[in-house]
Picture 1 (cartoon, one colour):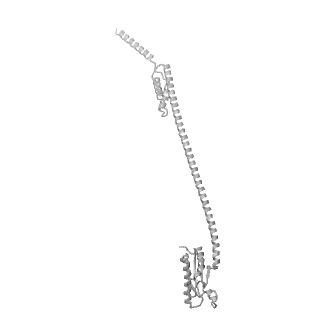
Picture 2 (cartoon, rainbow, N blue to C red):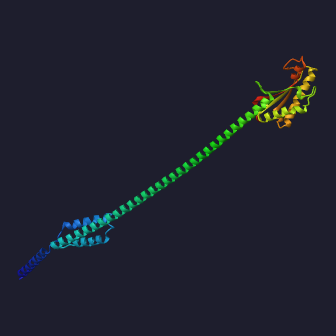
Picture 3 (spheres, rainbow, N blue to C red):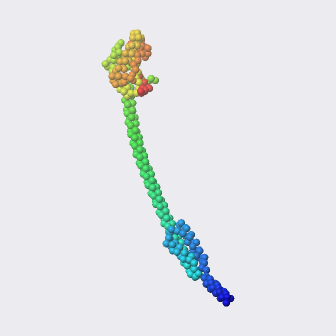
Length: 311
């Protein structure tokens, strides 16, 4: 009886083992597909690319959903392969869309940069053209100013030439007038200058006052001196040897002063005239005759060669 029970229990255990083995044999492992791993790798690279990840967010999300569905365990190899195919297509689609949008953005950026460069170039060309126009304007103004200056210089030169011609004409006329005056006064050219010698007929004997009829020669002389305003004049008085030398020296000086005073009264500057008494020491001829003594009693007016120094 005991043996039978033991036999029955053993048979039951064996039956359970067989059932268990049968159940284990019926459960197959999930199918693996390398295309799913490839889809995940490509998706991770796409999501980690800073230039592409933000440009197709919806397509990348759909690719993520497809990859997760393909990664779900299943023992159906056909289903696994189909889900892997879908996942890879979603990832490729997302990558293509992101790349296209990146290229589009780059094109827009390049176009914007090109527009900016063209605008800068046009601005620079406009500035250069404006600068050239300003330079041309300045050159034109400078040329006009030079032309005006040249015209003014030409006019000034013409006026100066007219003045010079007039001065030359006046000088010629003056020289002609002076030549006539000098001839009338019998002026002589010496190393000291022009010398006018006036004999004793202008003074009474022993006196230093000009005779009334003697002033005509001095009037003529004043005209000559007025035409030579930059020349110094020396008036020298002389006597014959009648009387003492001391007396004759004083007399000759008074006669020189008389001539100077008359010339001053006719407008000749006193600063230009020096009156000197020479006495009897410089006769022009012998004092042995009355005619000789008359020639020695004289006044000489010298218009010196050197101009008067200006202060």
